[in-house]
Length: 323
Image (cartoon, rainbow, N blue to C red):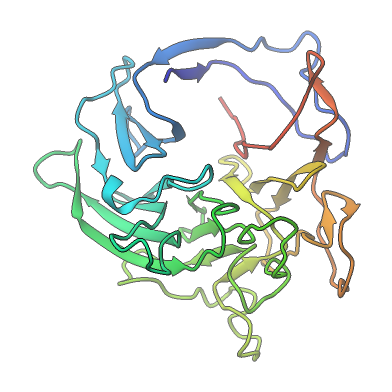
C-alpha cells in the first residue's frame, strides 16, 4: 500500500452543523506518494525525531525514513498476539511517552492460542520498550499489559492513544458494538465501554487514577474512576491541538450522522457526548435519557455531498493540522 503525504490542508472547523468545504482561494491540497510497501496502515506518529512510525493493522509497526524508505525489519512485530480478523480489530494505536522515546504504548485486539478462550477479542493497552541495542527495533518481550477491556463484539473497538499536555494517557473506547449500543454501555458510568479514559501511566507498574478525574472522588462505588468523558459510540481517532491544547474526537456514527467533538483545554472532564441518546445533534433513543449532553462542534450526514458529488461515510480523522 502507498503512504500519501498531505502537503497542505486548510480546513477550518466551525461550530455549525453544516457541510464543510475547502474555502475558495485557500491553500491548495496536494497529495504526493511518499512511501510504498505498507500493509493496511492505520496510524502514523513519531518519537520526536525525523522517523515516522506506521501502525499496520496485522500487528506490525514499520519505520519510514525522511526519504520515504520503509525499513525492512519491523520496529515491532506482535502478529502472534493480535486478532486481525474483524474489520475493526487489529493493532490500532501507538503513542510514545512525551519525555522518553524509548517507551511506547499500543492498543490492540487480543488473540490467544485457544480459540475458545473468552478473552479473545479483548482490547489490550500495553507498554513496550525500545531495544537497547538498536533504536529501530522494539523488544517484543518487554510487554507490560496495563489495561484489558472485555469486548462483546468485533466492532466499535475505537483504538487510538494520546498523551495530553498534562502527560496523562487518554484512551478512547467504543461502545462494544452490536449496533445501537444494545447493552447501553456508553451511558453507563460503571462500564468503560463508550468512554474516554484518562490514566496516569508514566512511572507506574500499570496505571494510577489521576486525583482530578471527575469520578475519582464522587463517593459512588459503582462509577469507574478511569472515566474522563462518556457518551461515545466509536471514537476512532483523537488528538490534542498542539497550539490550544484542546482535544478533538472523531466519533463514528450509526446510520446517519458523523460527529466531531471538542473538549476545551480547561475542561475538568465529565462531558457526556450523548450517544446513544443522540446521534450527532439528532435524537436516537431517548429512553432513560436525562443527562446534560455536550453537543458536537460539527456533524455531517451520510447523505451529504461533501466532495465532488460523493456521499460521505464514517469519520476517520481527529487531527488538527498546524503546519
